[in-house]
Length: 352
Image (cartoon, rainbow, N blue to C red):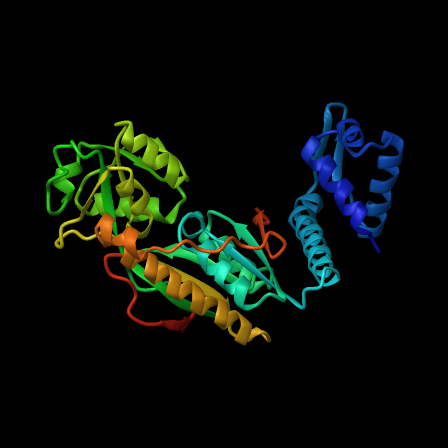
């Protein structure tokens, strides 16, 4: 039976492209590494590498093994982390995966409140850019809760009927611009208004970028992208500097408004909206704990959208400083790396 070290050696060779480079990276001799891979190939019953003078190339069996080996090592690392939390005195652990938007706005406050209410529970937070990855990690029991952005259309289905989806917030997007911009005094923005405007937007692959691109295409236009970034802070800085207009969810706009930018909503005839949803396993044995966490997320997500819709003065008066999260309870790691808030909790099973 192959051991975890065999898979680690195999992956390092695949990444480095040669036994020599992999042996150096692993701090072992090339002959010792070669012997370990021969052992793995004997256990597997097939060759994993084509050996050439210039290096190695994965065989079809090696191509098949690679994602499985990565998954095995990731699960082993997660298991070790989970067991370590019990050694430190925690009685449970929740694993959350999220796209960046909530992590940059309301999610830290929700996790802080959860940690204060459940001091025996350790929190692990992963961030990823891809909705499909979040769904897969939840379905495979590598995450307990996933948070993702979706468009305003009907909630899509996943192939896994064992998942439940909860609507956290339904909010509009706004256009951020310097206060002196010609569009700053408009009551609403239409596609015609910004067809020739340069944009500071999110990279291709982000759901928010897909929502923005689809809005332009429906009007028969294509966005003019001056800059792409996944960081809301960078978006705001670039908009302040006049690089382009920013289109962001209302709950993420408040920092720009507080810095003096102007936020203009889209016209009612051409709205631009996004949904933030949480997904969890329907049959999770710790469903009560997970439901409590999701309920806090729902409260904070909707509160952030409502506050962002208020004038700056009213918003400042209503916001109270949140307590700092305990570092030992809140751990962040990369994933295996509005104007109208949702009026009620919406649950449904995901299908394809």
